[in-house]
Image 1 (tube, rainbow, N blue to C red):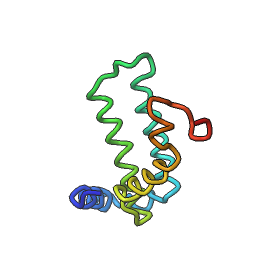
Image 2 (tube, helix red, strand yellow; image 1 turned 90 degrees about the vertical axis):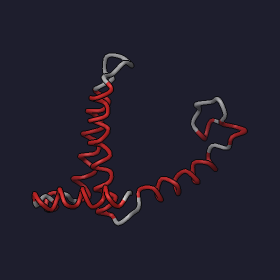
Image 3 (cartoon, rainbow, N blue to C red; image 1 turned 90 degrees about the horizontal axis):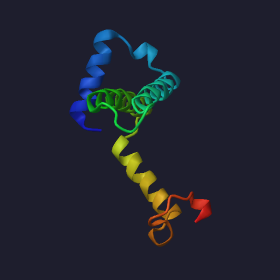
Image 4 (cartoon, rainbow, N blue to C red; image 1 turned 60 degrees about the horizontal axis):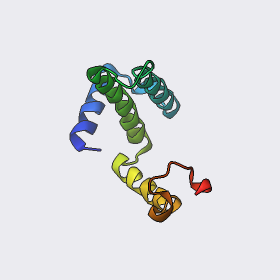
Length: 105
């Protein structure tokens, strides 16, 4: 995570003394709740309001960053690590132009 983002989030949480509420479990729940709100933007069709989508996406990312910080993991690195695992599960020659799950390729 960008260090400026990490500092800003920590400062925001510290100023409000909210870390006491930010257990890993609560942050994971908050990610799911905010993801539901993001999905709600598309409830009635694909043409969601861009500003509202951005706001909801920011909420999802905020809780993801807070959870990563709580767990002591670097979000960028865990994404890259997972991408390597997924690359093996979905080789280009089998997965290109297909949306099938890896065990159906």
